[in-house]
Structure formats: C-alpha cells, structure tokens
Length: 97
Image 1 (tube, rainbow, N blue to C red):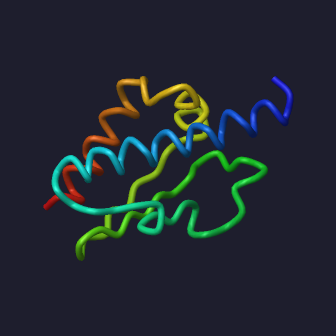
Image 2 (cartoon, rainbow, N blue to C red):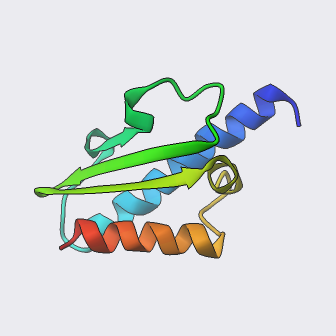
C-alpha cells in the first residue's frame, strides 16, 4: 500500500470513529461535536503513529482511550471490527455517565 493511500485510509478511519462516537452520544441525549475531541494530544497525525490517543470531553466527563493504526485504517469504510466497535461503545457509555 502506498503512503498516500494509507494516509487517506487513516484519515477516513479517524473520521468514521469520531462520527460513530458523536452519533452514539447524541443518541443518548448529549450534544457533542468535533470540538469535543482531541486526537493524539493535538500533535500532527501524519505520518501515522502506531497508537493514536483520543480524548473526548463531554458534559464534564473526560474519556481517554487509544486506537492502533490498524484499528483506525480498518475503520476507513466503517467501524466494523468487533474490538473497535466495542471500544467505541465503551467511550459512548462513559461519555453519557
């Protein structure tokens, strides 16, 4: 896989993970958006790190978790991996507490 294609898969994967979390938290009655997320502590994401840290601030809660580069790239067409989907569900549940 070339670098440009890998970068596109990575960016799309981040976007899909973020949208899945936003959708889940909004479905639970909380208003969040991209402004609530900090990826990789605000550092540059390209070239892709092997682990990406996510910090989500929602209604007084801060949820911190991480995703591997493989989890992110595999999410480029949707959050389909069971382990990634489970992690997203845990983040949503914690954000709704």
